Length: 153
Image (cartoon, rainbow, N blue to C red; front, top):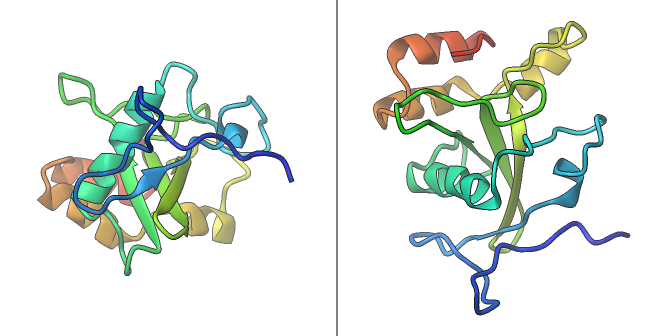
């Protein structure tokens, strides 16, 4: 099996962890290598920005059920929700690999004609996640309603 990618480290080579939960984050190569078969982060999203999206998801507990997955988004300094992925995704999904190591990828919403039915619904974050985002003032009520049905903000 090939190396999945590095864990985020500081300048001393120590894993950088989230403050509260002490989670590590792995930058999976397959989500950065241009392979259109899997979700891809935009090239202009730096590792620091990707990790910041993860930290925000952890900080606000943007999960639906016992941390099986966390969800996050990236805002501009002006408050606009930015695109994260090459398919115009604005929400990222983060999964635990085991222990305290997590990784993530852009997941929602997708503007693809072949994303319908079950495949489409399986990618959608649970509504509870969008409500948590709204309660944390990360999105507005209008944003929440649009994201819940798969529309971009």
